[in-house]
Image 1 (tube, one colour):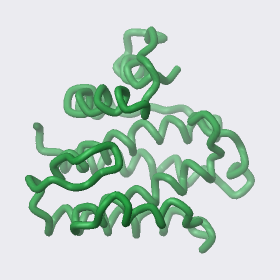
Image 2 (cartoon, one colour):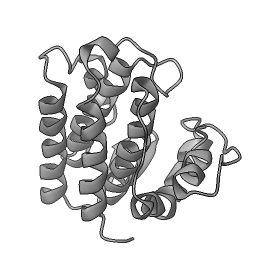
Image 3 (cartoon, rainbow, N blue to C red):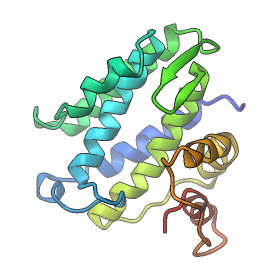
Length: 186
């Protein structure tokens, strides 16, 4: 696995930049995730940072269920709440033994894999948010290649568990379109 630090930073910036453009008037709009509004998507991603932090500290998947009903946007500053969540995750990464398995809802896996999954989620959900706010999604080819290479096996595993759609034909040969197609997104 490549050193994920730079990719986590880039993926978090990509998400945060688009989150800054998701004003209150867009929260009820449909996101790029079927059945989710932009608000649902933002809550999911913010909650994910807290859930992964909990898992890295030894919590069970059942322990994290209560975070799924939290409205992280209630405080009114989604960007600040995202960075609180992200910083909690990064602190947990810094203090955890990433070779120890965690109890993720999709099955036990090394903590190190949560780091790869977080990068994947930030990158792909930034696309879903872009769909919801009518913005252009332009991740770097390097970030996309990292996700395709390092998160590809995780996406396949999660697809088998019903958490990803089947791959589709890419709209073009661009790295971004290949990633979206691999992840079952158009």
